[in-house]
Length: 184
Image (cartoon, rainbow, N blue to C red; front, side, top):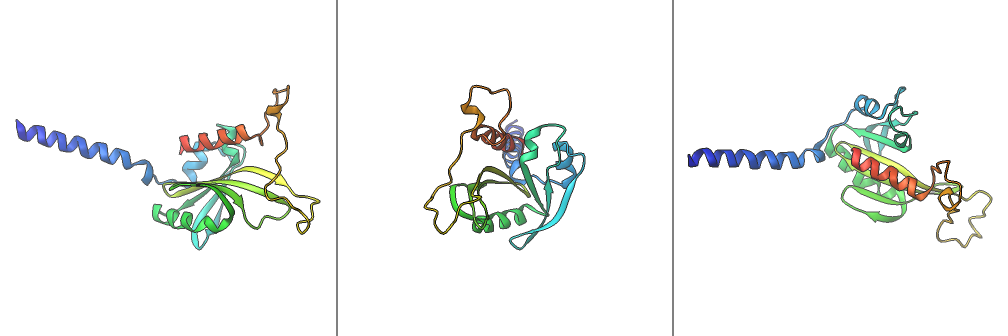
């Protein structure tokens, strides 16, 4: 009887431990992402992210949830390749505001005519990016500008009329990021 209880306990512990690790080792394919996100026309292209090969799948009018339209998917051959690329992408940013083991958020380096804040998320063999803010610098002379931080204009969430969705409002973009992390 004790042997059966020990065997049952060992199996239960193994199942629990393996179930906890499943999300970290998920394997995504372009077909699965296109189906899940409701992309009728898959727009995948071969891409190299800091020396690591992947497929970049860009949103194309989701039929399941419009929040997928704001995501850019980079699908790698393995979890290890995705981790390697994620470690290298810190060079993409001129300033990182938040950083964790599976995400980073900051202002992208080398963008002309705008300041772009991006959120990058690592899950399994995939990295997903979402632009969280884009601030136009059109007409500004970068040599004479004294701005150290981008100036963000008011969004519709600050106005009386909230019948239209402001896709660039901070609350909407935060919702896109929360939805992405919950889904993947």
